[in-house]
Image (tube, rainbow, N blue to C red; front, side, top):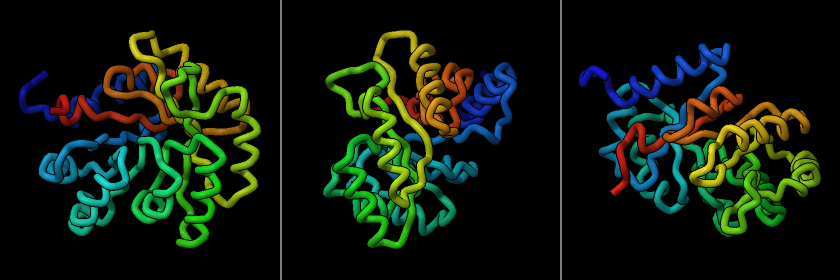
Length: 220
């Protein structure tokens, strides 16, 4: 790549190429720049380039960085992509524009209560434990239909499904499976794909890709 091409430009080029191959429109795909662990001074250049959708995985870290950034860039959107404790639901609803880690009934109850109190509806993606891994969060696949039914009984907007495939295994089958689960349950949004596999995720229908390392470099 030409040294004058920024990491953001490079990612955009790869997104466009994957979308062309998959015969998809670019406006179907949202790039979430994962800024977790990176300070505000690393985020500001992307904002200066016009990028507006960012992802954080901890409420407390986002609370420290984003109020000032949003004062300078009020149209910035912030997505919570990490696990959320039920006792942080109020703070998450106040700060974030979307939540990608709704995975259990207790959190559903806490978020519904927080949104009702705040008078704010925040779209939520259901995190699915797509690889049936004990160490990972996510709704078990067998429980997904019932959990989606419970969500639809609330006022919470259902943004889609989210997954993190098992490490060191070809991700395409897991992405394809999430796409099937979404179609079987009448859902359009698919939050899947990270720096190492977002092009594959786009081929399998991702609507939201979560890219950190390819934009910010390796975390220290």
